[in-house]
Image 1 (cartoon, helix red, strand yellow):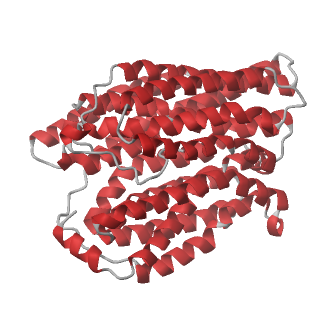
Image 2 (cartoon, helix red, strand yellow):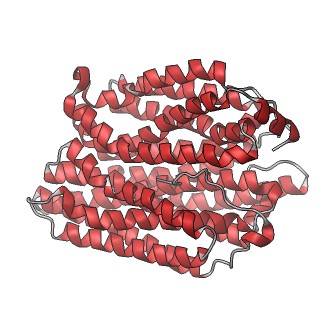
Length: 495
């Protein structure tokens, strides 16, 4: 933070009112990320949508959000954080209205992609504006408010979504989950124009547009065939696209290295890609955050289409997971930066056990399946996720030089979201493929959905086992030595 920013923050009299606008916009974004899952079966029936199209409603949003996070964060420094924030909220609100009015599944998927872009324009500016508006002694209080808002949004999303569909507000059914964003977004834009300060940055970096295109191409090559291959029967071009993604990722590294050698700004600094803790930690984060996203994409469909749960009942069933993650924040705050690597190893192992317990519950599922049956394993998984997330961020960022801290944190958030998109693609591919195989073999609906959800949970167990093994090779943290500490704003990353 620059000296000018510190002075501006200390002198800004309306910073807490401006903070309320930032919290409202963030709450809307987080709510939208969790509210959609319980509506997927209803959307599928109403719009006669193929299962891969339902995947794109969630995966497309997350993928665009992940790919646009870093460049939009840079654009905030270039053209102004307040301006980018207002553009993002306005665009997100317009895309929400288009989602609610979508006449068919194709229009809905496009509107959701636009929502993801609006969220990516908005999200990086929020914490950056907090840094500008508040002096250092007040920031911890401001970040704590974000943590509380995040927890409430994550817990209430499935409940609000299920309730809105159950009451069929104004006869809108699932469309109301998108329309609810419109008045909030309009109010946030109007209030933000007045209340949020426009503090100019001391430096204006140049956006690495070619780097954005290369890395976006790599993720599209990887994720698109994972989502669409099942619809077309896994043709050769799907495997070609997946194989082509890896040399494109390599091309991104070599392109960024050339920019580094020429003294040009990079989308992701080469020094970070060469940093052992950051590179290995990034791969771990990619796998780690793929599991909850894949879980909730398939869980709601498993309950509603496989066992006849209502959207509200499906929403209630998910509550133990975010509740466990929320409660883990209190344990993490007490442990601070102690036992970081040990906490990752222990919590990832326990999370794998939680997924295994969920697998056992699903294997014994029958028509008497109840909400309470899922509570213990989901609570274990959620608490373990919260216990893993904070130390994982701290270790990954512990050896990052102060000059790269902003880029490292932004890239790590993008990796989180990319992991979510990857997890949705893999878990859904396993889920729907197994269901189709069992139904073609004459299995009953419930049995087919048990087999499909079991297959997706199998991926989650394998992913967490991979996280545990990889974490063994993470270097010992050097938080006190480096002076760089992860700051996730008190929020629960990746939920």
